[in-house]
Length: 93
Image (cartoon, rainbow, N blue to C red; front, side, top):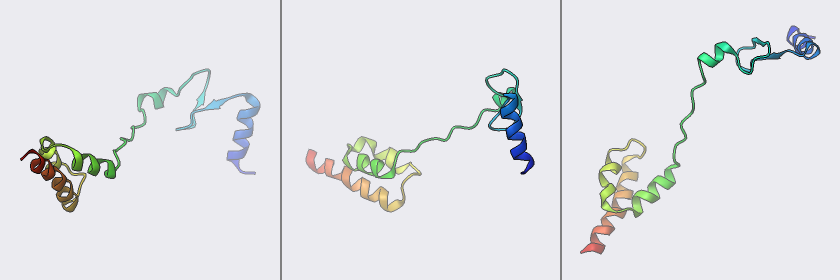
């Protein structure tokens, strides 16, 4: 048996809880005082690229500047989305 398994069993017997991030024993506390000072960074959720392409293809030419200045799409994807906006110009003429 490893020392980690023995420590886990001892924690269960004594009714101790440990912080999931650093392993410090929590004595009646809800969260670790050290880890609460340094919260985990949240991961930004990005919109899937196919939604972005479809929205750019179907939207009006007013979103054309946003399309060209984004870093999310490659040059060919920008051309494809821009071609859908050109259709709006043809419909208005």
